[in-house]
Length: 297
Image (cartoon, rainbow, N blue to C red; front, side):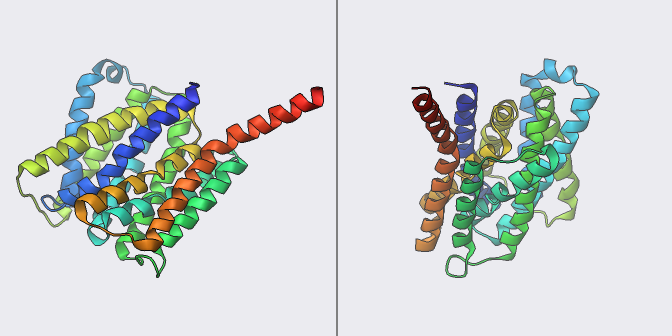
C-alpha cells in the first residue's frame, strides 16, 4: 500500500469517528451548554496529549508555536460555532452542512498554495455539492438559522484543512497538534461565562466527554496532523464528506432523525462524489499507461 493510500485509509477511519461526534454532541447538549462541553472535552484531551507526547512538546519551536496557534484558532472557533449552531438544527443536517467544506477547500488551496485541483477532484466536489443541495432544499429538510451558522464553521474548516497541508510538511505534527488542543480549550473556557450556563452531572455526560476527548480529539488530531500531508487538501476534504453519511445513519438509529427520500438521494450523491474523486486519478493513470504501451507497441 502506498503512503497516500495508507494515509487516506487512516483519514477515512478517522472520518467515521468524526461522523459519530454529531450524535454524541447532540446528546451532550442535554447535559452541558455548548462552550462548556467543548471546554471539558478539550481540557481532558489536552491533558492526555501532554502526557503521551511530552518530549516532543518540550522542544517546540517558535514557528510551530505560531502556526499551531493559528490552526488552533481556526479549529477552536469552528468547533464552537458548530456546537452553538447544533442547538437549532439536527445532528444529521449539521454534519451534511459541515460537509460543504469540500466546496471551500479547493478555493482556499488555489489562493494559498497556487495549486489547481485535478479534474477528478473538481468533478467529485460538484457531485458532493449537489448532494448537499438536495439535503437543504425546500423539498428536503429546509434551511434553519443553525444551518447557516454551521456554514461559517464549514468555511473555517476548509481553511484549516489547507493550512494543515502546508504546515505539517515543515513542522512537527505533534507540536502543531498540542497547540490546536491548547488554543481550542482556552477559547472555549473564555466563552463559558458569556453563554447561558448549563451543567447536569451524569454518567452519560462523563462517557460522552471521554469519548469525544480520547477518540474524537486526541486520536483524530494525531492522525489528521500526521497523515493528511500524504494526501492533498481537496482529496482529504472529499474523504471527510463521508462524515455526514455516518452521522445520518447513527442519528437515525440513536436519535430517530429522518432525512427522507430527498435526503437519502443527497447522501447517495455524496458517496458517489467521494468515489469519483478517489478513483479518478488511478483510472486516468491506467488509461495513460495503456495508451503509452499501445504507442510503444
